[in-house]
Each structure stands twice: as structure tokens, then as C-alpha cells.
Length: 134
Ligand SMILES: [Zn+2]
Image 1 (cartoon, rainbow, N blue to C red):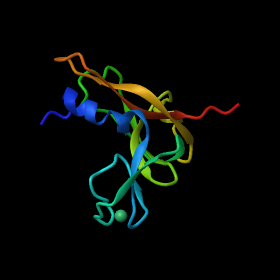
Image 2 (cartoon, helix red, strand yellow):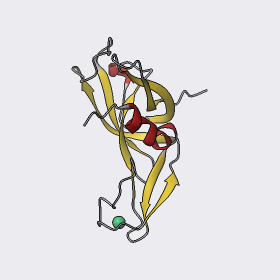
Image 3 (cartoon, helix red, strand yellow):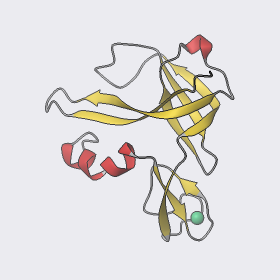
């Protein structure tokens, strides 16, 4: 299955254009992106909840090789972002790798993720950038 297929991108647009997470009615925990069953307790009783757009960097890693063919820039910073109700892994942009610090406040931004060379389909998604002070 082609992960970047137009049909798949279209079906998942709501979850990538907004920060919509799944929240379990049984155990109350949230997860992103939403799944068909709670990854913590397996319950299928789920609600959708919109996540806060500002969080903190719990940890990060600098990735020097990526699977994205159109990536002309490297490295990529992948962060584990704490949004309070859940955590997620996302690219951190608009900052140099040497300037990233654990605990930094970051906010969600909407950015191009990939271009499919065959179809010309541009895939957008959520990334995070540091919150500028002052
Ligand atoms: Zn659960």
C-alpha cells in the first residue's frame, strides 16, 4: 500500500490539518494520530479531541538521513512534544539543531511535508517551531 496515495491523504486530511487526537472513553488517555482502538487499553470507545497547539520539547533527535526524496535540507530535527493531554513525535522547524533544547516551548505550524513526484500531490501536515519570546 502506498502511504502517500491521494485517497489516503484525503481521508486523513482532518487529522493532519488540525491537531485532532483520539481520546479513550474507558481509560481517558489521548493518542495522536487517532487510531481505531486505544493504544493503551484496546478499547474501541473513542472520542475525538482537538489538541493544544503549544507544548514543550521532551526530547529530540537530529536525523541526518530521511526517507523523503524531496528533502534538500538536512538534518531534520524530530521532537517528542508534550501537549499535556498526550505526546507526539513531529518535526521541529525554523531552528538550528544546535539551538534546540529540551523544555523549549513550541507551537504547531502547518507546513509542506512531501511532494509526490508522480502525481504532483503536495502533502501538508503539522510541524512545530519554537515560540518566540517578546
Ligand atoms: Zn484506553
